[in-house]
Image 1 (tube, rainbow, N blue to C red):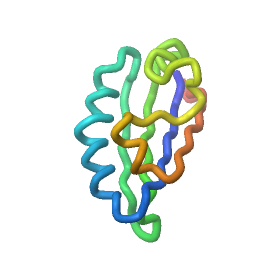
Image 2 (cartoon, helix red, strand yellow; image 1 turned 90 degrees about the vertical axis):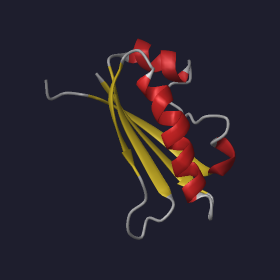
Image 3 (cartoon, rainbow, N blue to C red; image 1 turned 30 degrees about the vertical axis):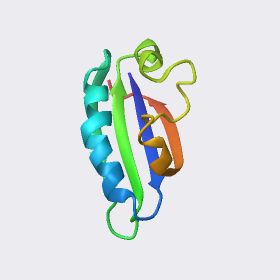
Image 4 (tube, rainbow, N blue to C red; image 1 turned 90 degrees about the horizontal axis):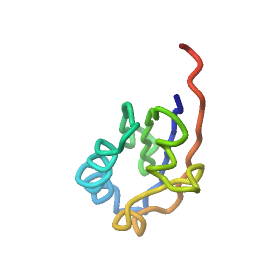
Length: 98
């Protein structure tokens, strides 16, 4: 299994717009992806006013590639979300507790 940790810093004054788009677009997109086993969506908290995170669990690399494309190790957002994002990052980890 693969853990994908996505983080996005959102342009000032666009946080509410990004949150709405994640709820309306990204989460349904994730839920409909074959091989996506679960997710945790995190919104800004405390001093971290503009950074969101999405942690997803994928069955295998083939499932992650089907979702992200061949550049699976790079961050992905929907076309509508992209103009709201100042910076984004994606890290990947192999699950080892099982």
